[in-house]
Amino acid sequence: MGKVMGGSGRKQRHDPLLNDLDSQHGKLKRQGKKKIDAKDQKGHEDEEFVDAQQSRKILQLAREQQEELEEEDEQSLQTSSQGINRFCVANYADEDDVAEEEEAQGNNISDFEPEDEDDFEGYEEEEVVEIDEEDAEMFDQYFKTSADFNSANGSYNLADKIMASIREKEMELQYNEEEAGDASAVAEPAAPVDRTEGVALPPKVIQAYLAVGTIMQTWRHGKLPKLFKVLPSLNNWQDVLYVTNPEEWSPHAIYEGTKLFVSNLSSKEAQKFVIAVLLPRFREEIEFNEDHNLNYHVYRALKKSLYKPAAFFKGFLFPLVESGCNVREATIAASVLSKVSVPALHSAAALSYLLRLPFSPATTVFIKILLEKKYALPYQTVDECVFYFMRFREVTDGSTGQDAVRVLPVVWHKAFLAFAQRYKNDITQDQRDFLLETVRQRGHKEIGPEIRRELLAGDSREFVSDVGNKADLMFDVL
Image 1 (tube, helix red, strand yellow):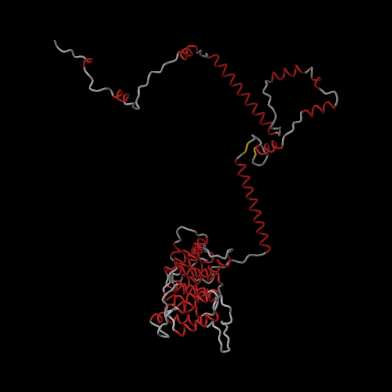
Image 2: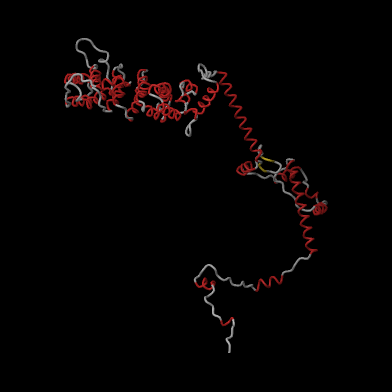
């Protein structure tokens, strides 16, 4: 017999994938057939359908009700526009019902009429309703009859609100203009300075740099105008700079301008910028500031200007001292000197210049700061320091000097102590004796003993005047 070829006799090579997933608790699972409850099945059997005639009646009734609602809405809008009280109660009864009630009550109207006026007054008083103040305020808050309330539909309109705010702004501007007109009538303001007068520049250039000056008045951060960046490369940059009105620049613009001009110009040209822009702004900030402090960005500009020491000393420090600055201005400017390194020759030349000026506490502040930097000064500058402190001693030959009779401030004694601590080994024995005599006559009760101890602990140099090549180069620096 041959083999029976049937599908039932063939074995499967593997189980179906669905069985494997079910055995491993996979995400794919068989969904069982939903069992229909007997109650639901019974409910479906009991349902009855509405025929066409009944559905037409239902639609007609719904249409009539909708028309009645629209008529009632129109009547309510008309009554609200005529100023009728918002709290009126609408009567939703049919007209036929109202007529029947009137006919039924027509014969009994006399029963409700009062017999005398006293009864009528009492009847009216019973209908008065008292409203609490809090409820009245709440009503005014949500239903106020203002310009932005639309009485037609009892809601607020956004357009009305916008128009009301515009009207308020216009009234405020008109009031401010009237006040400004009254103030100008009392005192006429000074005419603005004409920046185009006396400047030989083309009109287009003047117009462009006037716009640059306007930008620099409010500039805080970001990119600088390109016309401003090319200013140091112009031959007549001073005239163009005058057109931009540097007096009105913001402090941030002062710093950026100082950095631009000091880094791109020579010392002599940078000196012109410092004396024309930076020095007046420094004095103005301290004088007109409420706390008499210097703006941080102007202070940074001063530090940046010290990268050209000759421009700083000749364009800022020397004019500041010669014009008679106060101690506060000197202290702020000296703090810049103390924080920035200055070449030794520039420092020696500036110290020699300050020592020759008439005595003032502000000048002594700068002398003290330069001595505390502890640079290796030439012997000629050391000798000038010795003569500066020696001239304050009392003269015993009958003649009195102007500096000898003055009461010396504490900053002078501190400067003397700084000189004794750093340069006690660079003076001669005769100079040491003169300085000890000065300490004995004009010494401070607390600082004087320290100066004397430092002078006695030093060693004397061999030559009276030992001026080397550094001293010869010192006068060529500034």
